[in-house]
Length: 68
Image (tube, rainbow, N blue to C red; front, side, top):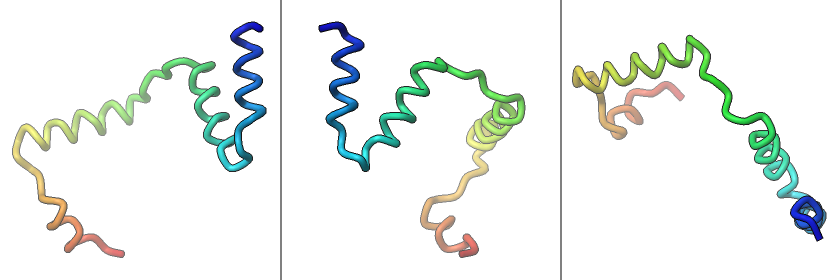
Protein backbone atom coordinates (compact mmCIF):
# COMPACT_ATOMS: atom_id res chain seq x y z
CA UNK A 1 0.00 0.00 0.00
CA UNK A 2 1.36 3.44 -0.93
CA UNK A 3 1.47 6.49 1.31
CA UNK A 4 -1.29 8.01 -0.83
CA UNK A 5 -3.43 4.92 -0.23
CA UNK A 6 -2.80 5.24 3.51
CA UNK A 7 -3.82 8.91 3.47
CA UNK A 8 -7.02 8.04 1.61
CA UNK A 9 -7.75 5.28 4.11
CA UNK A 10 -7.31 7.64 7.06
CA UNK A 11 -9.47 10.33 5.47
CA UNK A 12 -12.18 7.78 4.72
CA UNK A 13 -12.15 6.75 8.40
CA UNK A 14 -12.47 10.29 9.78
CA UNK A 15 -15.70 11.26 11.50
CA UNK A 16 -17.83 13.65 9.45
CA UNK A 17 -17.28 16.52 11.90
CA UNK A 18 -13.47 16.37 11.38
CA UNK A 19 -13.49 16.43 7.58
CA UNK A 20 -13.46 20.23 7.34
CA UNK A 21 -10.35 20.32 9.57
CA UNK A 22 -8.66 17.71 7.39
CA UNK A 23 -9.55 19.62 4.24
CA UNK A 24 -8.12 22.87 5.62
CA UNK A 25 -4.91 21.13 6.67
CA UNK A 26 -4.45 19.30 3.40
CA UNK A 27 -5.17 22.44 1.38
CA UNK A 28 -2.52 24.29 3.38
CA UNK A 29 0.00 21.52 2.70
CA UNK A 30 -0.83 21.55 -1.01
CA UNK A 31 -0.54 25.31 -1.37
CA UNK A 32 2.62 25.60 0.67
CA UNK A 33 3.54 28.62 2.66
CA UNK A 34 1.93 31.76 1.30
CA UNK A 35 3.80 35.06 1.54
CA UNK A 36 2.30 37.69 3.81
CA UNK A 37 0.57 40.64 2.20
CA UNK A 38 2.23 44.05 2.58
CA UNK A 39 -0.67 45.10 4.83
CA UNK A 40 -0.17 42.11 7.13
CA UNK A 41 3.60 42.68 7.26
CA UNK A 42 2.99 46.35 8.16
CA UNK A 43 0.51 45.39 10.90
CA UNK A 44 2.97 42.91 12.40
CA UNK A 45 5.76 45.45 12.33
CA UNK A 46 3.49 48.05 13.96
CA UNK A 47 2.64 45.59 16.74
CA UNK A 48 6.29 44.73 17.29
CA UNK A 49 7.17 48.43 17.43
CA UNK A 50 4.41 48.96 20.02
CA UNK A 51 5.97 46.18 22.11
CA UNK A 52 9.45 47.67 21.79
CA UNK A 53 8.16 51.12 22.81
CA UNK A 54 6.19 49.74 25.77
CA UNK A 55 2.80 50.64 24.30
CA UNK A 56 0.97 47.68 25.78
CA UNK A 57 -1.88 46.95 28.15
CA UNK A 58 -2.61 43.87 30.21
CA UNK A 59 -5.23 41.36 29.17
CA UNK A 60 -7.26 42.42 32.18
CA UNK A 61 -7.17 46.08 31.04
CA UNK A 62 -8.19 45.04 27.54
CA UNK A 63 -11.13 43.05 28.85
CA UNK A 64 -12.29 46.03 30.94
CA UNK A 65 -12.11 48.49 28.07
CA UNK A 66 -13.29 46.48 25.06
CA UNK A 67 -16.72 47.23 23.69
CA UNK A 68 -18.88 44.16 23.55
